[in-house]
Image 1: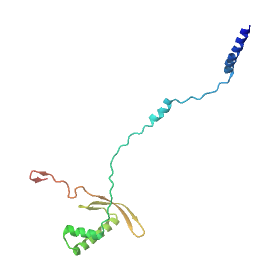
Image 2: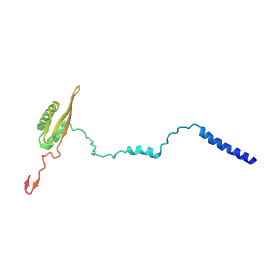
Image 3: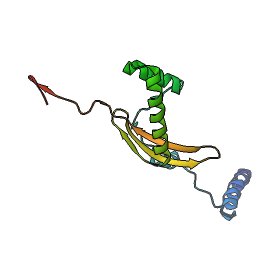
Image 4: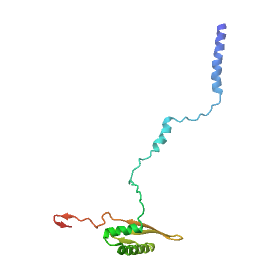
Length: 151
């Protein structure tokens, strides 16, 4: 019987463990997120490839042309003397300035079309924002030569 008592002693802890597991309260476990569930939102947030609509070329502005240089360029273009060119250029600039400050649009064929976008009165000046539409072909529409005729 000694053997049976040792078997009983060894069997008792196993039964106690099983009984303790059955009588222990069940604890709610949280579901563990799997890799597949985490990867799903990443697929939904796919960003479309950007499309370039227009390339922008930076323009470096040079020094502004001042009135004496403008008069010199007009003298070189026309071949006239400075005493004849200066009053005409000054009168032209005065007329253009007055028309633009009044908000008038100007259409000057070699230059293009000047359109006033905004005007603002400042303490000592009127600020005029102007848009210039300069034609690609300032000489007028392209002329087609067919044989000896110009169309």
